[in-house]
Amino acid sequence: MEKVNDDEAEEMTVELELDDGTIVNCAVVTILTVESKDYIVLLPIKEEEDNEDGEVWFYRYHENPDDPNEEPELDYIEDDDEYEKVADAFDEYLDNCEFDELMD
Image (cartoon, rainbow, N blue to C red; front, side):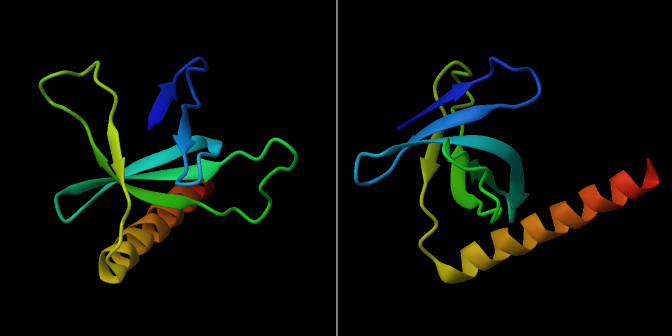
């Protein structure tokens, strides 16, 4: 389903296969923990444009603790309330990033 590339030390990317078979490269923005569950925030990288609208995608994120080399699994968030909690946590993450930049 996905492949994590860490060719560049600072920016990890994921190849995500959509339901229609399209492959989309995404930058990994962050991994958030909300109510004891992990979520990944992905920024689609569109080759022909810069993704100026800043659209991000949220997925449930699972790693196999017994095999760190196994590819992580991503699951859709189908519950609206769960999605809203993740979106709120991401907004808080962005606010903290902006605060940190101001302090530097």
